[in-house]
Length: 612
Image (cartoon, rainbow, N blue to C red; front, side, top):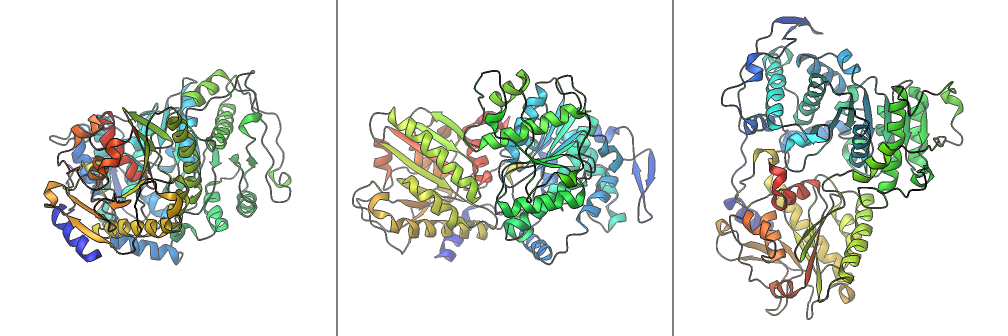
């Protein structure tokens, strides 16, 4: 069955090929001698070629960036090497790339950095920090990953993605310098994430930001952002199991990696953690020589009688907000802001830890800038609700056990609140996909209690003909892998819902069969391909696989969303089994979760402003 589906889909999907863009060589005005005996051409001022490259637009830069993505087979080799512990040269290689790009580590030391790691909530914590400190009139830089719609979302100035013009200009400055020195460094260019990290540092230095908030990519100890030597403060959000082939299969091993961002003499804060991982963080703090403290509860902060309001939904955001407050206060105190003058005297860090638990940091009275920053913070794709007439999209990029649990709690509370205000039947639909090595069956098991009327699975492909813009190209996973994952997710869901069939599906006459049937009507160019379990003619299918996000969303919404209708180039025949129930529902509630890449594809369709 897998082979049949793969052959059918691959005939309609355009083959993914790398577009190699040759940038114009930038000729520098000087040289810097580097380790290894070779010399790097560099210029202290941007060259004309870097500032303006004829016929090189934003999409050209992104196409060139995409050539730095690691293909699927090479990525697997890297994972095997990491499993064998061959990671020691990662940071040294990163330093070499930084020098080749025309920067020095000493220059990076001048950036006033907040460095944040963790498994869950590090992006939200960084977003809170950025908004709070921008409210103090500071020019902020913010580096995060992954992006949802456009790659420039990863590098932000004053809360907004850098413009296409700035991205293009700075991209070619860095790309050309690295390209013209690669022969002296075994012909290598940095991989995708490394390049973007170098680019972010380059942008923040040239744009002269007052501070830079840096989110770790994966782990901490060997993450390429960890070339930072002198951050102002470090933060560790809630820990969980993720990226086990890289970080380890236990919470303790993961905590060791996360604690690798600690620096001697640099204060660090964390949120409540299980005893084992917390003890590891404490040991890491001791051996590195930093002061680690536990954040107090958000309710402990004084707010002049006002109840704190958070711009990000979900109870779990409280710990992220508390961590952000501690990080911001420490940054402001370090820079002698009048609201938070420096403390007098410090205690030796070795005396602070009792029973392998860090001391609790002091709560404090929040300023107006802090309260307002927490209230207006936005972070797309996380606990986001988008209402379109009688269709409501509940969007959350949760992809770990802990984050899916939080997502389920949030969705059930919010969807119930909406359903109580609606007259007539309300149908709930799950749109799901996963990426990487995650245990999709374990994630889906947590979603079963939501009692969805339909479950839809699709790869993170926007359109069946792959007419994506360059920002959403992904060469790190093969097409066959994407399709296999969708079928595995479908199979796991059907198996899980068999146990709950008496109270899960509300549609009459439904039956759960273990076998599957490929249904094809017309060709792929017509956008008509779905995969579902067998059914009687009068029975609506409960679990379906579509070849792309477009087709899946169009079938779910049945033409109710005018924005989605306008965005589709290959209309899908909507008159399939199950369509009647969707058409007759007063409201359709759609939970989109399991992958930030899935969320990004959906947002590109649903919010056209994100593509501007």
